[in-house]
Length: 149
Image (cartoon, rainbow, N blue to C red):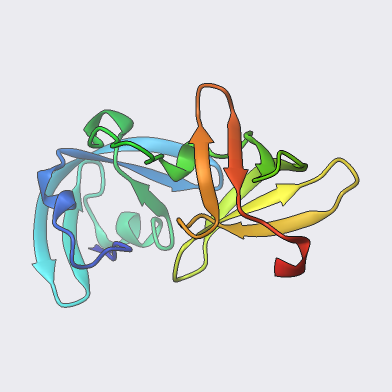
Protein backbone atom coordinates (compact mmCIF):
# COMPACT_ATOMS: atom_id res chain seq x y z
CA UNK A 1 0.00 0.00 0.00
CA UNK A 2 1.11 3.60 -0.51
CA UNK A 3 1.69 5.88 2.46
CA UNK A 4 1.79 9.63 1.75
CA UNK A 5 3.36 11.57 4.66
CA UNK A 6 2.68 15.27 5.28
CA UNK A 7 6.41 15.97 5.10
CA UNK A 8 7.38 14.30 1.84
CA UNK A 9 10.96 15.54 2.12
CA UNK A 10 11.46 13.94 5.54
CA UNK A 11 12.99 10.53 5.99
CA UNK A 12 11.90 9.87 9.59
CA UNK A 13 9.56 7.09 8.49
CA UNK A 14 12.57 5.08 7.38
CA UNK A 15 13.76 4.90 11.00
CA UNK A 16 10.57 3.29 12.35
CA UNK A 17 9.92 -0.38 12.99
CA UNK A 18 6.23 0.12 13.72
CA UNK A 19 3.49 2.65 13.04
CA UNK A 20 0.07 3.40 14.48
CA UNK A 21 -2.85 3.14 12.08
CA UNK A 22 -6.04 4.96 13.03
CA UNK A 23 -9.54 4.78 11.62
CA UNK A 24 -12.89 5.74 13.15
CA UNK A 25 -11.23 6.68 16.46
CA UNK A 26 -9.52 3.31 16.88
CA UNK A 27 -5.72 2.94 16.79
CA UNK A 28 -3.67 -0.18 16.34
CA UNK A 29 0.05 -0.80 16.16
CA UNK A 30 1.43 -2.43 13.01
CA UNK A 31 4.99 -3.63 12.44
CA UNK A 32 6.62 -2.28 9.29
CA UNK A 33 7.85 -5.29 7.32
CA UNK A 34 8.98 -3.38 4.26
CA UNK A 35 9.37 0.22 3.11
CA UNK A 36 10.42 1.63 -0.23
CA UNK A 37 10.37 5.25 -1.40
CA UNK A 38 8.21 5.92 -4.47
CA UNK A 39 7.33 9.15 -6.31
CA UNK A 40 4.53 10.36 -4.07
CA UNK A 41 5.31 8.62 -0.80
CA UNK A 42 6.30 5.16 0.39
CA UNK A 43 5.28 1.70 -0.63
CA UNK A 44 4.86 -0.13 2.68
CA UNK A 45 4.27 -3.69 3.75
CA UNK A 46 2.62 -4.08 7.16
CA UNK A 47 2.32 -7.06 9.46
CA UNK A 48 -1.21 -8.45 9.20
CA UNK A 49 -1.88 -6.91 5.78
CA UNK A 50 -1.21 -9.83 3.47
CA UNK A 51 -3.47 -9.12 0.49
CA UNK A 52 -4.91 -6.29 -1.59
CA UNK A 53 -8.32 -6.33 0.15
CA UNK A 54 -6.70 -5.88 3.58
CA UNK A 55 -4.66 -2.96 2.26
CA UNK A 56 -7.74 -1.40 0.62
CA UNK A 57 -9.55 -1.55 3.98
CA UNK A 58 -6.90 0.85 5.34
CA UNK A 59 -7.49 3.48 2.62
CA UNK A 60 -7.68 7.00 4.12
CA UNK A 61 -6.53 5.78 7.53
CA UNK A 62 -4.40 8.12 9.59
CA UNK A 63 -0.84 7.00 10.31
CA UNK A 64 1.33 8.14 13.21
CA UNK A 65 4.65 7.27 14.74
CA UNK A 66 4.50 5.73 18.22
CA UNK A 67 5.17 8.34 20.91
CA UNK A 68 8.31 6.53 22.09
CA UNK A 69 9.80 6.90 18.58
CA UNK A 70 9.42 10.69 18.49
CA UNK A 71 12.48 12.87 19.04
CA UNK A 72 12.83 14.86 22.25
CA UNK A 73 11.36 18.35 22.11
CA UNK A 74 13.45 21.49 22.09
CA UNK A 75 12.65 24.69 23.97
CA UNK A 76 9.31 26.13 22.88
CA UNK A 77 8.32 23.00 20.95
CA UNK A 78 5.24 20.85 21.53
CA UNK A 79 3.47 17.95 19.89
CA UNK A 80 0.13 18.88 18.32
CA UNK A 81 -1.38 15.75 19.87
CA UNK A 82 -0.81 17.31 23.33
CA UNK A 83 -2.87 20.45 22.64
CA UNK A 84 -6.49 19.16 22.89
CA UNK A 85 -7.82 19.87 26.37
CA UNK A 86 -5.55 22.87 26.95
CA UNK A 87 -7.13 26.08 28.26
CA UNK A 88 -6.34 28.92 25.86
CA UNK A 89 -5.75 32.56 26.73
CA UNK A 90 -4.59 35.52 24.71
CA UNK A 91 -1.33 37.37 25.42
CA UNK A 92 -3.08 39.63 27.96
CA UNK A 93 -4.41 36.64 29.91
CA UNK A 94 -8.01 36.83 28.63
CA UNK A 95 -9.50 33.30 28.48
CA UNK A 96 -10.53 32.25 24.98
CA UNK A 97 -11.74 28.71 25.67
CA UNK A 98 -10.45 25.16 25.48
CA UNK A 99 -8.89 23.30 22.57
CA UNK A 100 -11.48 20.72 21.53
CA UNK A 101 -9.55 19.26 18.59
CA UNK A 102 -6.85 19.91 16.02
CA UNK A 103 -6.74 19.33 12.28
CA UNK A 104 -4.36 19.73 9.37
CA UNK A 105 -5.62 22.23 6.77
CA UNK A 106 -3.02 21.36 4.14
CA UNK A 107 -0.63 24.11 5.20
CA UNK A 108 -0.51 23.94 9.01
CA UNK A 109 -2.12 22.42 12.07
CA UNK A 110 -5.10 24.35 13.43
CA UNK A 111 -6.67 24.23 16.91
CA UNK A 112 -10.44 24.39 17.32
CA UNK A 113 -10.92 26.47 20.47
CA UNK A 114 -14.41 26.60 22.01
CA UNK A 115 -15.37 29.19 24.63
CA UNK A 116 -17.92 28.44 27.40
CA UNK A 117 -20.52 30.48 25.46
CA UNK A 118 -20.01 28.24 22.41
CA UNK A 119 -17.93 30.74 20.42
CA UNK A 120 -15.53 28.79 18.20
CA UNK A 121 -12.15 30.06 17.07
CA UNK A 122 -9.80 28.35 14.64
CA UNK A 123 -6.27 29.23 15.72
CA UNK A 124 -3.31 28.25 13.53
CA UNK A 125 -0.66 26.37 15.53
CA UNK A 126 2.20 28.43 14.11
CA UNK A 127 4.79 30.65 15.84
CA UNK A 128 3.06 33.86 14.74
CA UNK A 129 0.02 32.85 16.85
CA UNK A 130 1.28 30.47 19.56
CA UNK A 131 3.24 32.19 22.33
CA UNK A 132 3.63 29.22 24.68
CA UNK A 133 2.25 25.76 25.38
CA UNK A 134 2.44 24.35 28.92
CA UNK A 135 1.53 20.69 28.40
CA UNK A 136 1.78 19.61 32.08
CA UNK A 137 -0.26 22.68 33.11
CA UNK A 138 -2.73 22.14 30.21
CA UNK A 139 -2.47 25.79 29.09
CA UNK A 140 -1.73 27.54 25.83
CA UNK A 141 -1.10 31.26 25.34
CA UNK A 142 -1.72 32.77 21.90
CA UNK A 143 -1.49 36.07 20.06
CA UNK A 144 -5.11 36.53 19.16
CA UNK A 145 -7.38 39.44 18.47
CA UNK A 146 -11.02 38.66 17.80
CA UNK A 147 -10.63 40.66 14.59
CA UNK A 148 -8.41 37.75 13.39
CA UNK A 149 -11.47 35.52 12.91
